[in-house]
Length: 243
Ligand code: HEC
Image (cartoon, rainbow, N blue to C red; front, side, top):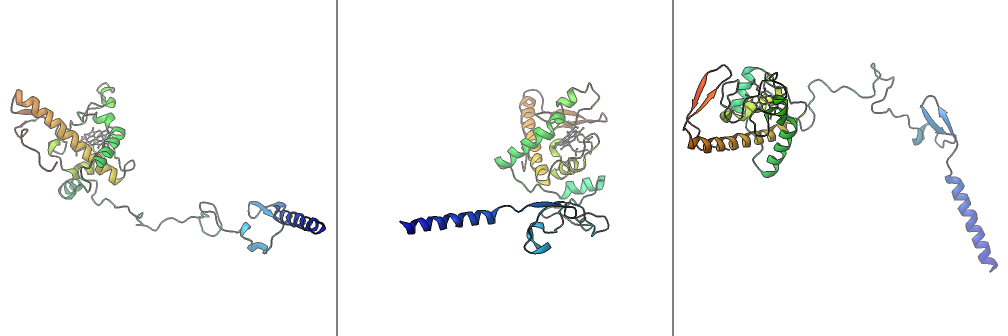
């Protein structure tokens, strides 16, 4: 009985000892380190608690501009980023049209992503069906001219929208074109390609509807370009390839 009392006393003393050694040491404010440091340091200034490491985006006196982080070397490309090689010129537009292919295919997931991007970034101008009648246009009292209709319009570059190569679409979304601004800072390359899948789906859908109504009325559709020239479209009943 006496022994067991002694043991519990010992255990109690042990707990008190451990608890006191874990207690937070008193702290003082260090001007140099700009935060509190404990009074008791076991390894002088090398204690990990007060490690003098440079804060990532903080100031320091080592570099000329006093910035903790460095500017990337000129020409640095972020990992996974593919620079767009075609210049913002008409030559660039034509080259992009000739050589770029959509790296994404018409899977339900890609189309759903494209439709989502379209709703958030394009619909307010181009309209839900691509007719060029989004709320920004219809609400502008004619101040904002309607974008080319995806279905029966003609691009300012000369192509009928239904024949517009994807590379030209990508170029326009990247740099903007006349009244349409650049979307390069809002959309990743992947989002731009996926929204093109949706634009093409809208074009195809519009064409199918045109064909349906055209079949009952006339075989030809008149398309009036921005400068007033009329193009007679006799190809509308052709089956679309690659779409
Ligand atoms: C501020 C209104 C506005 C927004 C937002 C907008 N567009 Fe446009 N878009 C236009 C106008 C206006 C044109 C006609 C430009 C021209 O004069 O060729 C156009 C043209 C186009 C063309 C035809 C390009 C060509 O080469 O002729 C495509 C494709 C297109 N837009 C897709 C999109 C997509 C996709 C989005 C969303 C990511 C979008 N636009 C967002 C106004 C807009």
